[in-house]
Image (cartoon, rainbow, N blue to C red; front, side, top):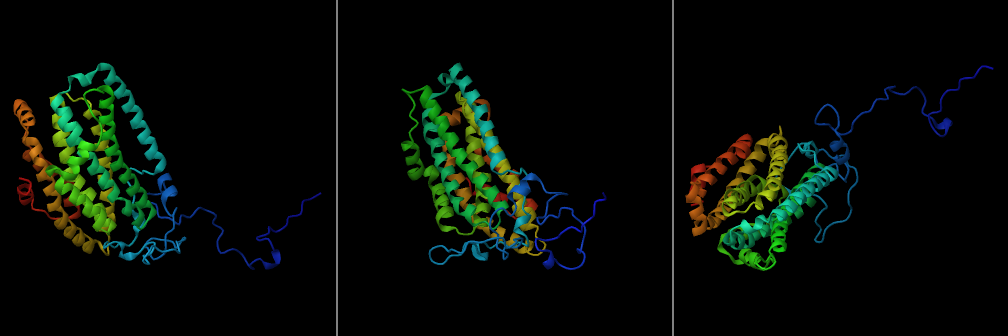
Length: 384
């Protein structure tokens, strides 16, 4: 018996089916999101348009919104949240493609590696060869004070993670903020580990380090700047620009590299070197995604790029002197007799020379691509 072919039904109720043939017989996949490359990556599929995105946000699809408002009538999102303008806030991409799963996986790998190294360090009793002055004055107080700085900058990022205008930028800012928190936690973990190895001679409590952070002269400009970012700055792009393209790129590197990386080994401290690479990795990742945001997306926008770069220059002129004041206040740490003696013993370059190199590297990697201007000679003089 021959099988009778029946025309396929195109709807639940045939009598209400649209008349005529379909406009197109193409059943291929069509992306509603724009891939950066030839096709969408897993990172783009999982992050793009995963959260509400009102259509007034350039690049948004009017997919959901929150009807509620903040106290005082503040909108959920608003064009006035930042001076930056962009044709498509969803064009941003993190070059490292970080979202929750790869971020947590990377941190778990870092922890397992560090755990093995710490076990070997304890077995070797390497802490017995660490200089007592360095351990008490630098690790317990100065380095301990810097953990409060990193925690404060992390908190300054809290409003940024809420106010950015696209979910794909939000993923990058959240992981970047957690990296800052991770920096502070690693410093405290290092101090707690030392206290466990030396219970009778090392105190990992935060009282002395917090007192130095709040009242010490070496951190006075830094705590003032963190307070200003956290409490008085509402533009989320300005906060990102200041933290990642100015403050951490100069002051953060100065403390981590010029003091801790250059001098730890001279005082028998082989422990700090286990934590610094993860901090440097976070710094490089932040540099990559902020380059895409401020150079490719905002600075390179065909319509608003020129004005965006002008605004960035205003931000740079406003905040760079404050960051340089933080460096200048921290400079006396290198004049302490113990550090000065160690520097002269092996002929290390002066902190001024080292920071001059950081300034030149910063200008080349951060400012020149965005066509921002800075007087390096004047900047060097402000740190003396």
